[in-house]
Length: 408
Image 1: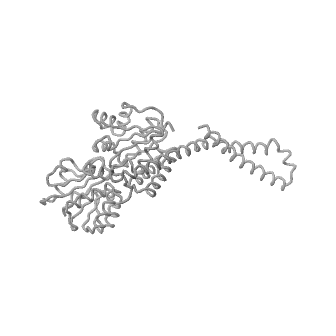
Image 2 (image 1 turned 180 degrees about the horizontal axis):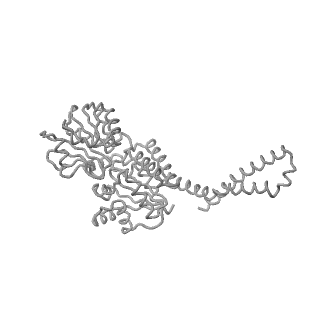
């Protein structure tokens, strides 16, 4: 338990632009995180990236002062400048042992989110675990913790009103868009077909928008989103050959670099006059700063959503106390589960040793006597020994749990 820690880079202490520098593209995570785990000799590692946070869940020895965090950051992104490293190291939140466990439970229950009560985070945590587990980065402790975390979040969403009239980053972005008076025949172009854009698309569909085009690295995924909208799908490079213009451009991809450059933006505008709307919910931003500052652009990003999120927090404050009570109880329950699991692992060799003793007794120590028995006698003896073996293992482990857990 003491070896578990969380290093968090979040909207609470750092600007979104800085957090975005720590985003690792999905196809790069195997190499980058594998090297990170090996270099620091972590036993387990989970990497979580959302639109407002990067978090590392770690099982491993050693303290994390600013110098060691800077070394870790260099592994995540070797292109970071000395100024970047200092800013990120200073803004990092390091949580240890029980505090780290409580943080993870709060995280998946949305209490640490930019938008309190948003449900997307539970899916993001689960997918991050599944991906890191598939890469061989996680082990028994994180597996047990994530299982408890998902159960805790589900209970909170069921037993409290923290997610009543749910809002999310996507829903707040959509509300800002509607406040601009966008008409239902607006030409809407999606760049990216991931979870956030899919959520936004559902709002557009619900409110009877009808003119959609989807660009994505994977044409298959672009087509899936386009099919739900009765729109058209294209691969990402075809942005430069698209000539139908847009009224609303929605960008959210896993790219660590800007996709909508000044040149692509002007190409997509197609010499049209009048204001355009760009929603960029990527981390890091996928729209170049020069484009976002264009006076002909209404630009909606994570920063512009922050004030709406703070108002949402005020509305949900009464529920947060109820959630924290549940989390405190679940944290205590996890501690008990973990101690039991330690006993199980410690006694993992006992059944093998008992069986080896039984086999030695049958085949060598009492072999002569057993050979004098008839077939029925041998069968009965085998049943008796198997029964005793099973019961002994159960009693031994239960007794060990009772004694060790009572001591703790």
